Amino acid sequence: MENIMSSKLFTTRQGTVLLGVIAAVIAAIALLVYLNNYRSSVVQPEISVLVAQKAIPQGMSGDVLAKTTGFYAPTKLPKDQVSSGAITDASTLTGKVALADINPNSQLTASQFGTQSGVVGQLGPRQRAVVVDLGSPQAVGGQITSGSVVDVWVTSSGQGAGGVTRPIARLLFQGMKVLNAGTNGGNVTLLANTPTQAGQLIFASTNAQIWLALRNTISTNTRSATIGAGSVTGG
Image 1 (tube, rainbow, N blue to C red):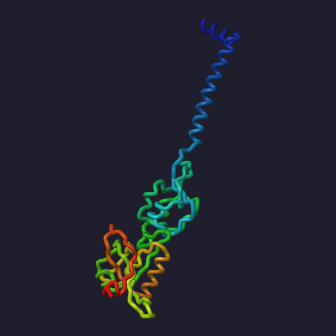
Image 2: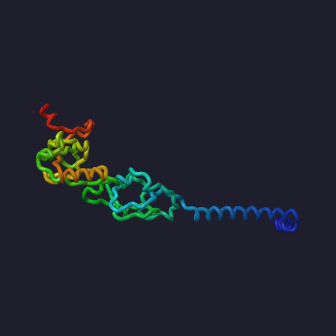
Image 3: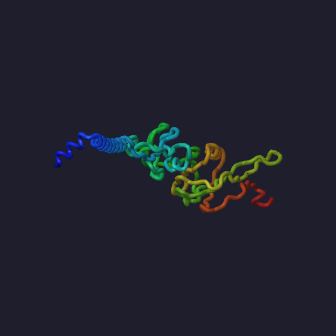
């Protein structure tokens, strides 16, 4: 009986149509499964990594780099295009410096950054480290250490009325950071925030006498002052 019904199913017109519909459904399901598997194999998940937007010079501080806009940007890339050790979070640059020049459009990787001794890692793009040679009193008797904040005074001879030379003391900078210092005078490394400040320190060190005044890190700045004999003696 079953053979007779199967035979009629294959020979009648309705049976043929039904078989065609079943075959089409099976083919459609197979196609959907294939396309889904193909899409999964082709479309890669994207990962956001840091990519250099302009040249990053060797020795640039990671701390400064993380705080300075324009040097890098988070960029989404397919997983298979992400370099080994690619940096995804700028906080990982803290305390490190670029070990070599990094070209624009390059992914930032962990191997490009490392620790470096000395003060260069503390310098921003415009900052300069200047060493001045001071005596013990001029360096606050050895009480200045790395990280101290000081005011920089300069004593010299100024031109007074009638061409008379008069000594003066001038407050040159306030709140300048000390990067390194000897235990009792000697070389003191100061952080100049601009190349011009660096030049002023060098000029003062060569042509006048520099005195440092130790201050609290939360002290406020005052109006720049020039002290002459009249300011001291009242004359």
